[in-house]
Image (cartoon, rainbow, N blue to C red; front, top):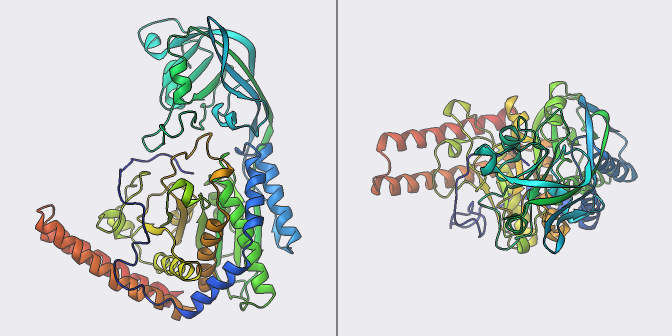
Length: 529
């Protein structure tokens, strides 16, 4: 999930949807509520969890063995459920693949070696501590030198460098031109729960390189254990595969009108976490099957628009598929990190809106996640009903399943919704954050929730069926109360800022005008739909 953006620390993420804003929740459009119910009842959480568990057994990066095996599992699940409009296209250039087999990193002390990182199969917890693109090495003992010493002029030739920070720039600074053969780095973010998980290490990459090198991401405990150590024992076993493209799985539920723009779902397969993004893979698989059965068995009418489901490499598959889509495209719905158990992780489900004025001018009750804001300018804003339709769908699910911790947040970017937006297509991201073990060795099955995937899938399914059915009455019923509530919030936030002397009347008038314009365009998007 995502390349790192500027982080903005926030408070108050816990709690119920802020879309309610203290007022009675708007009435859910009846057909939207029915579509949520149908999807919720037909979604199989056990099937979704089984797919996540299978994906979690494999270390998944672009095109490698685990990536392909996971795609094949998705394909087989869909085929067994009756999908026939099913393909595995090769999207993207051919590149060598990389799969970890086993690795061991030990500190050599007066009492002998002490294992710090060890995995014997790609299923083991420490598998994500080996930096992707590491080369095979050892077993051998090598000298350890600190980054501070290398920066001070120490010879790193044939040594391993101990450092802190992102491995890619550290490689360029400390390894590429120094003769060092390896990098050990502590690389955790402020949002990671170091106190609660002192043994976790962050998944990461070495850059492309010419001579053999290896790297390990360290936990805080292991980094401390290496202070004062001068030698380490290292063994790395990896499999480098022949160049291969980024395969994808594409499935379709044909609509009544093949020329109408399709609703396209996406879940990326790469990255080895159970939540990121095994949960997206499993939830989308079970959702596709639930929607197909609902349509084929007549629980809902066949919609006019086709629904397409894509699994593949993050960003790349979406971008390349959209470059030459086999069907017209109307909108994108992206499922990334959708399975976090809120009782374990503590993060609410987030509906990341397509860029709206909240992404330019942050006003209460909106808040960014610790992921951080992306730069958005006023001329990039194009009003659309999709943002508020998704929130209305989440409320419909809440009415089915009881209180649910979710909210919408302003656009932040960095996942598969971005290629759709780049082409001027409406797109939404569903995810959870802050996950305190995001992108680490601790992102495993014990943090995944079947009921949460079911709630998220029903939200996506209700919205997709409504869009695919061209139900403009339901779209309008979702939009209008959201417009009224948003403008009330803008007025209240502006008044508070003016009273505190933190803004001026011209700026606040501009913000309100932007929201009014957004909703006029959103109304027009319903009529154009």
